Length: 285
Image 1 (cartoon, helix red, strand yellow):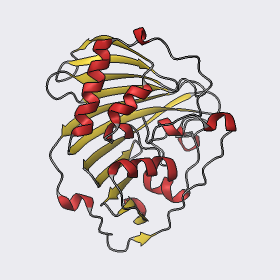
Image 2 (tube, one colour):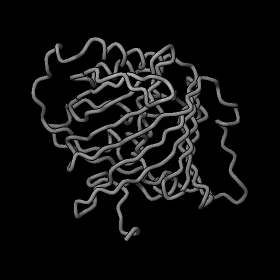
Image 3 (tube, helix red, strand yellow):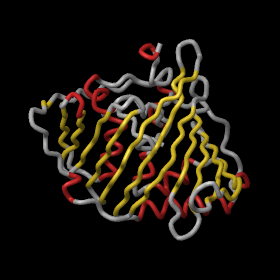
Image 4 (tube, helix red, strand yellow):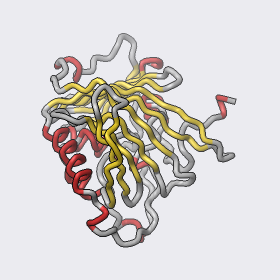
């Protein structure tokens, strides 16, 4: 039965074989992997934005955006809706480390134990699959911001919560939020958190932000309300650091016998003209 289960949500774009080998499908629920938004009604009035909740959200966004270095462990799970309508939960563990402007390292372990990784050294993106001892390289001299956009939009590799690691996070939050409310002070974490509920055009999400002078996001739940079945993506964000990782973390040295394979970037699907004008943010939510 397990072998027949689909890890991707219904309707998620297929990835090139090489990319799937390296990254797996544990990140399938991402903003840019979800179906295009349905036509929306006019945006709600500003009164729907609780000033206290918005201030907390933007304080978090600015704190992350201005950090020269970031590291976090993300424990995620997501709904993969099967052809018969059954919801099956899969997940993964990711360690993300970045040094701005142009260093990024991501380690991934799926719920089935499969592992993969990505290294960006400022000049190239390298994806690696240890179990098969294969890796692929894409030359890309740019910033972390641009690389995240490239990985999600051009390589079509879903990277959960990619927006959190961009310097434009505050502007993206301003554009994304249609309604926001303060829910409660949550004390189930090791520090008190502010629980916020946000509604947008394509997704709704809840976020728990640590109180105090380190407003890191500690939990996120995203509901893809325009996707069939309204599946969810859930994440716990732990072990936040703001200390730069060692320089060798951002250098990929192929293991003995490793095979370099071509990375085939899937052709992007054409969208109906009515949806071409829809603005989508670079990176996954």
